[in-house]
View 1 (tube, rainbow, N blue to C red):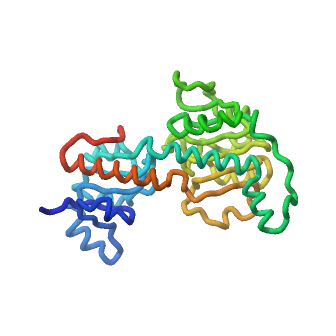
View 2 (view 1 turned 30 degrees about the vertical axis):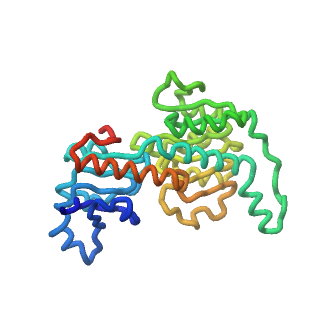
View 3 (view 1 turned 120 degrees about the vertical axis):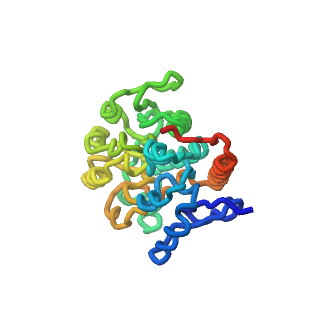
Length: 309
């Protein structure tokens, strides 16, 4: 029996998707043959939501019916536009939210307690040179931008540290035990630390702009585990260099990989390479869910985790 054809937009899926014939995006040399012989036969694609297939490739897949993405985020795709051409989109929600929250707290603590800075001093033989004793975490005010699964997991971790928590989002939620602040600028002005965990889409692009960063102030800390598009990175770097913002912990960037030179001379930052959601446990679970969505599609069954358009 012929295996269904699936476009793999990332490597290493052969074991997970052994039930399918995997094809990969064409190179310049193979493009003509791919478009002539293969593109129209591809019914499903697997990739990462923040790194979508190019528009010209998407347009060439005239038989496409499903895009299954790893992870919860699907900001690289427009669900409504896909639905209009008969393509379903699935993601992997509520799998890595706890892992992302772990890294958010790690970044928060690293910046607030100078852990990365202290590590660099020890390695340079400078011990405590230039360190100014920081404030305790207990009693500091944490504003969370986005109280979805990740925001709630951050709050659950932050509360035992004695942080005072408030949050911002598009609407209040009755089941959230922390005060809701409908004005983001007011939340930033109140907070000592702002943790960004909202969904990335057109409505949140550069949500954290120069005005919000200025409101956070010279002793403020910004943590971002959402997407790089949510923060005005140029404004952030300018504020850090001008010391109008104390520090930042970032797992996501405007451009990924982010150029190392971009961060040269930027003080009080802890940077990680978009690793927050990537644990062995979450990757295995996401892989199983991607495979289940593919199985259901080809079996004609309702998808497990369709994204609403």
